[in-house]
Image (cartoon, rainbow, N blue to C red; front, side, top):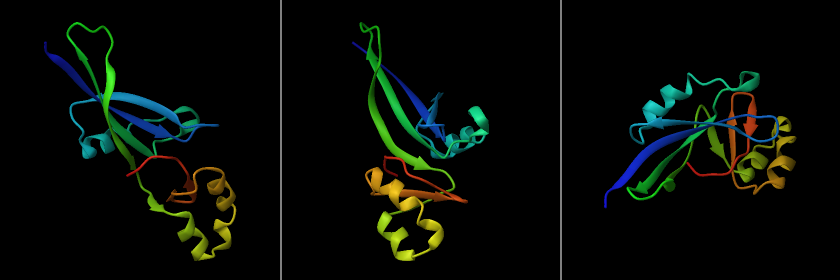
Amino acid sequence: MSRIEKHFVTFYSPGTFVAETTEKPIDSWDIETAKKMAAKITERHGAHPYGFRFSTRSRKDDELDSKVTKTSGRYYLNCKVVTLAEIKNRKDPKDSRWCPNLLFGDGKQSKKGENRVNRHGGSI
């Protein structure tokens, strides 16, 4: 029996309470292609993706539904990943409002881009 596989990329954009997501098919797990695709996505309220993740869905010929069989870590666009400890060590008063939010989550990583800090799970 043969196995059918298809690759996807899921883009994450800032949402009201949780991230907005858009999933699109992609030929392969190609970071440069995903970056170009991200530039064309605009979510509600004009939000643009801050990151993406690849996945592969598979099924056998005799199966009706596919299932996710492989996922990548999360890739971040125009951001630098910093830890909560790094933010605290900078002792920048502008960062103080982000620390409680990071402690509410897992507190392990923050993604700082332009004039904002996004704290979302996943790895790079």
